[in-house]
Length: 489
Ligand SMILES: [Zn+2]
Image (cartoon, rainbow, N blue to C red; front, side, top):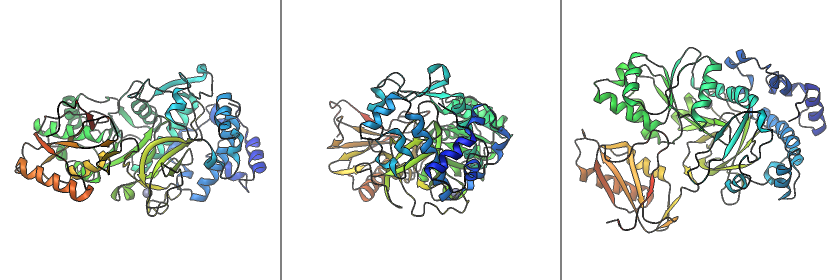
């Protein structure tokens, strides 16, 4: 990519007319030009503070327009992007025109797969620092490149804002429980914690027995992991005579990889040391990491998250069918455009993740009013189940189960008979807590009645004893297709 000097940025902004005052751009880029950043001139001591974090919405949108124009010019130098924009009669440079993003083509999995092995890579492979990949559960993993700037500067800056939002401070000791390898979760936390000054125990997922003891003996104050795994650890601790509420020191958790209900989260927090907060964090490999959403201390209570790096990864929330923008209170799909990423940028990538836009997206008492509030991830548009005409998302079923006393919150499963989105029947499997004083039939009756009352869903509920269903260290597979020979009874 061509780096721009401060002068060129000013010239471009004047030409495109997005900023009346060129000085605003320099402020928007934290006083650094992209050239300074590329030379490694980024001052990591500024991670403790970021003026843009409390910018108003108008300023954030101004930054977005400015960066979209730069992105368009960068992409115009790459034939595969030129062809992609041409598919809807656009030029990449058109991204600099007001409102043009809405006319730009969306990016789908098929677009990436057809450009195997390095889809839309905009720098030579030799200029990348590393690659991360999506899980590849439905085919080959898709590789996303990161330049040194992407990984060591942009990602660090984005995650530092998240750390500040939840009150993580330099010197905190963190139990890093996200996975490593090609997945972005663990590596992204490593690089950001190092730069921010958080002391890292990079354990990754698993090693439950060890962690139950280390959480007591080493006393980490911060953790990053799947919320389901923490519930498993809490249960393991009780089995080893350790009381997390009394013996652990955890103060903040960044829980991602899996969206859980507020009920589940409240139950987690109740079993942890007083004041412990389980914050929802959200991101994707395509976005460049777990950098899109985070709850602050206020939105946490309302089960909402700020799209906290909207000045760096632009999010649109749209109707999945028509792509019309969702209004406050509406459910829509998150569609993202990476504004800063040098290698493997995305423009209008369809995440398939559905959220509800807050009723008041730009009014949070924390002051981060430039960064819209959305609810937690409701589900994926392609996870939707249609059961005899009733539309159901697995997370709605989780909400019901989590609200019933006596169930094991982290262990439940949906079994379906056929690999199709239109189903005649599903079966919900749950577990009864071994120390519950409620009977199996009491629990089953209440779950069945709630599924019916809240979702209009009538289906068999099978209750197993605790420990019968699979446990997941990271993202759980909630919907299992089974041989139709094992028919639902
Ligand atoms: Zn807030």
